[in-house]
Image 1 (cartoon, rainbow, N blue to C red):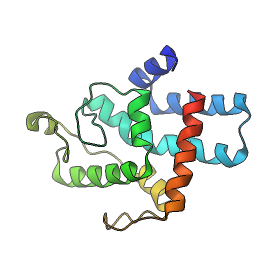
Image 2 (cartoon, rainbow, N blue to C red):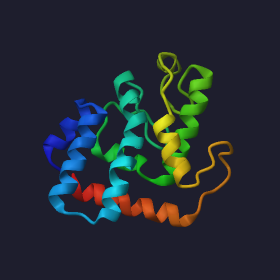
Image 3 (cartoon, rainbow, N blue to C red):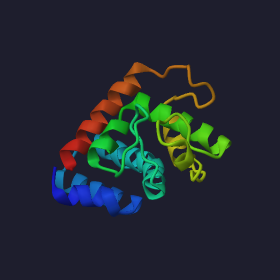
Image 4 (cartoon, one colour):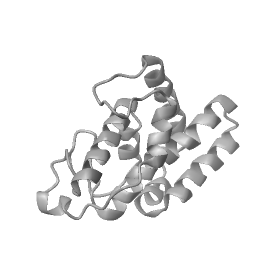
Length: 157
C-alpha cells in the first residue's frame, strides 16, 4: 500500500478519499458492474468512519480501540457483516449519547457525538439488510458481492 494512501485515510475528508477511489477506478478501466458499487460502498463506510476518526473514537469490528484510520481498518469494516454490526452499534450509541460496544475507556466514550447514519442506512437497505432487527440475516449473495467490492477497492489503493 502506498504511503499516500495512509496519509489520505489519516487526514482527508470523506469526499477526498472517495474522489481518489473514483479516479483510480477510471484509470483502471474497471467493469461498470464494479464501478457502480465501489463508490457508493466506500462513501457509506466512510460516512461513519470519518466522524469516528475525527472524534478520536475509532475501533475495530472486534471493539478494540484504534488510534488512526488506516486502509487496513477501512478494509476490516468492508466485511458486510461487520458493516451491519457497525450500523447497529452507531444506532445504539446515538440513542445512548455515548459510544457503546467497544473497549474504549468509558470516560472517552462520553465525548461521542451523534453520527448521521442516513448514507450507511440507505446503502445497507439497498442490499436487504434489516435495520430494525440485528439478529435477522441478509442473503449470502450480498455478502459475497461485497467481498468482491472490497477486493476491487484493495486493488485500487
